[in-house]
Amino acid sequence: MRTYSKAILSLALCSPPAFTNAFFHPLGYESGIQTSLKAIPDHLNRRNALFTSLSIVLSTVTVCSVNAASLSQTQVASISIWPGIENLEPMYELKLSIDALQTAVSDPKNWPYVKKRLDKFFKGALLSEKNFYFGVGLQYMNDIQYSKSELPNYVLLDKQGRYDALEKTMKSLENLQKTLTKEDSKAIQDYAKDSQLALQSWFALVPEEDFRAVQDLFLNVKKADINRDGVLSADELSSLSTEQQDIWKKRVDKFG
Image (tube, rainbow, N blue to C red):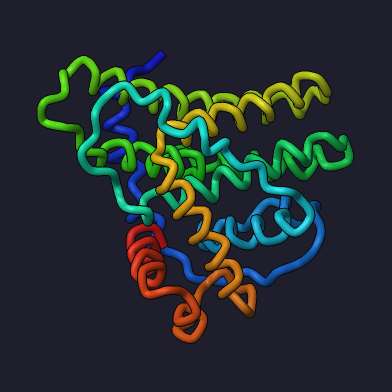
């Protein structure tokens, strides 16, 4: 297994600016889980594509939330400053996508569409969606500021635990992608659940108040997006609180 320290190169190669300003074409909204799981054309903005897919799937799927009581209970190092909510929001979107995916695979009729969506997720080598989200997760972890008095070994253990959870999430999704070709029902269900649990364990290392804040931000942004184009206009943005407006602007500036 790779260690956190060896993942810094991945973070440098997959940092968000490569995706932020390259594509601007918005997606329209359609209904049905089959549409949401279709392969998304290369020229579309990854953030718009994910936002659209989520809005479709979440209309039919109950979101599976992390148990707030368990948040941060496995943290092993003292942290003085956490990254801003804008840095956490893309990972929350990924979480909702995986929650929806885990529900979708329960019906074999959805397997071809799940397979197409995962093929798209892993396509593109260094420029894949998988590496984008891995990079976002690593950047969040790298921006954590630990207490000056904390022992280096505890800091390393904390970073390693976060990295392992993120790596297991991606590995489980990769195994799910391969297993869908074999149409092994039990393995498909298991890998989908493994990916969900792995990302939940990553969020279990996030402060409870930050998780609630990013959850509220996502829901309010979704409500504000009246025309469902995945982009908030000035008027739509004004419906958010001043605090959430500032957070969302930072999120868009940083990740697109």
